[in-house]
Image (cartoon, rainbow, N blue to C red; front, side, top):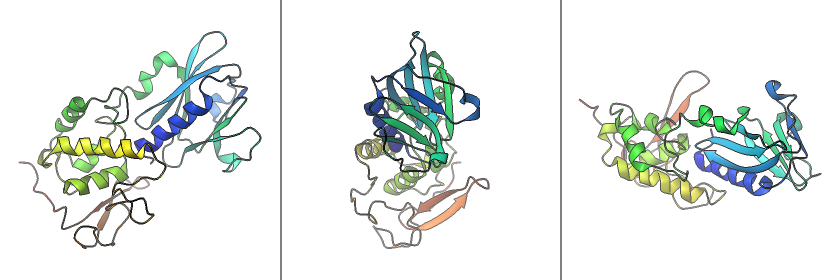
Length: 269
């Protein structure tokens, strides 16, 4: 699933491409909205909340609406000049928004909804503080994490109701740089505040570039400390990186760690 910085960049792309323009046409390729026509609506802008995208519109009668989309596992937004061939097959498109200067296409989107802008909290109100949001609240994020002291830190970081924006890649990398095993209980993380500040720093840095890196090295095979480096030598000690799978069938997640740099911690008593 895309990380928060990927969604942030998608919001920025849509905002730069569509904000202030009038829709010439909309094409919702999902059954529940198949007959919806937003032609004539002004695009006010697009914002991200965690891994959710909110594209706000004002119709010609003044109604404020929000197109809510979520990339899930395989989704993406692409923007093309009008008349340009799309870079992905048309059958993968779930939503098309066209203005005089651009065509924004949402491919393989996991969620496509249309709702009154006043009701946005019904779809994003459950989220914890957004690491890339203007209202980031470190104190509240730490309070929510510490309220579940026995929970494994990796799973807590992935819980979007505690703090929003961290996916499996960042969870793995944060555990490594903090020197804690992914199964370490929240209460046993030596400096949880520092970990969360590193998370914010990582996401903010990568939100400004197309290539994600947590090591600071942008070369293709040097970008990550442990993520997707199973059996490769640890960059610090040379021990092969370990990997395990967990979760229900079809929704498995991989955990990556160095057995030496991230020793298993004793559970909370």
